[in-house]
Length: 203
Image 1 (cartoon, rainbow, N blue to C red):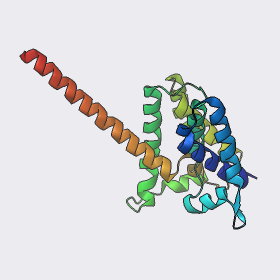
Image 2 (cartoon, rainbow, N blue to C red):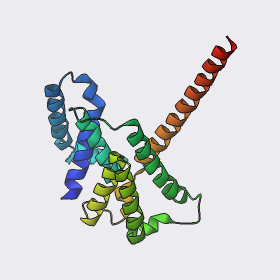
Image 3 (cartoon, rainbow, N blue to C red):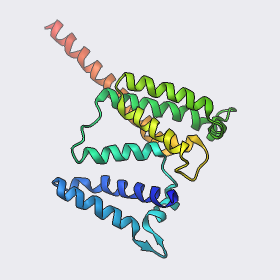
Image 4 (cartoon, one colour):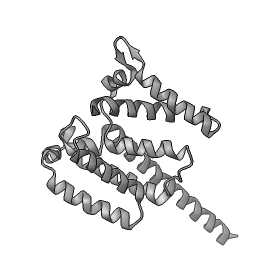
């Protein structure tokens, strides 16, 4: 059953978020969301469009689906994540990417992916990390971790590896890129502020 609805959810959210700027009000956004869901079910050559997309991009992690769902709900009036919350979430998934993908690319001798098959130590560490995020009111990252862990516990995905619930290559690239971009913007803003201060002092 999960092999059916997870690809359709991913397709629906992706199509909705791509075209949501064309919708001018909540009613139009609701129609767009319903239309995206129906489009995901449209059969092409005996297979739905959602499953067609899945053959090209694979399965998105539960964390990605949580973040996409949050972005979708924000289009219907849910308050967006604060800059601090967003930064904490980016740092969380960028950190997971740095732990996992160097080994997958052959850049490390360790293989953290194997830990995902017997993930009790990971569950403990990430459970404590979720608690820290909740205490700091970084709700977005904490919600993604908690729901990914719950989905793994309930076996809501075809994979038996905890990592596949936590992160995927697209979330990894987005988190690393967005975190780098945020850091560069902060650095440029700081330099601009220093130049402005120097100019005022000189005057």
